Amino acid sequence: MVTESDVAHIAILADIGIGSDELAEFTGQFNAILEYFDLLDQVEESGRPAAVTTNIFRDDAVVPSLSLDAVLENAGESEAGYIRAPKVM
View 1 (cartoon, rainbow, N blue to C red):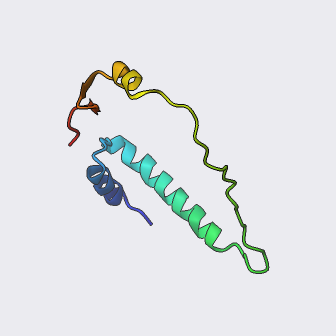
View 2 (view 1 turned 135 degrees about the horizontal axis):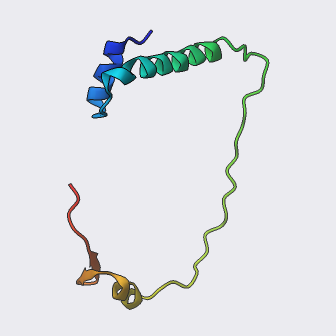
C-alpha cells in the first residue's frame, strides 16, 4: 500500500509539484492501480495458448530520394555536406 509520504517522495524524484491537498487524491489513485495489478495477477492463464504476434515486413526497395543539395538547401545551417545543429546536452 502506498502512503502519502511515498507519493510525496515520488513527486520529488519526478520533479512534479504536488500540493498537500492533492496528496490524498494521488495516493488513492496509486493504490487503485496497484489493486488492479493484484487482480490481474489472480487471472488463471493456464490452458490458454500464448498470443503470437508476427510482424509483416515489406522488402527493402531503392526509391528516388532528395539530392544532398536539396536537403542542405532546406537546412538552417550546413557545413561540409552536413546539417549543422546546436549541441543538445
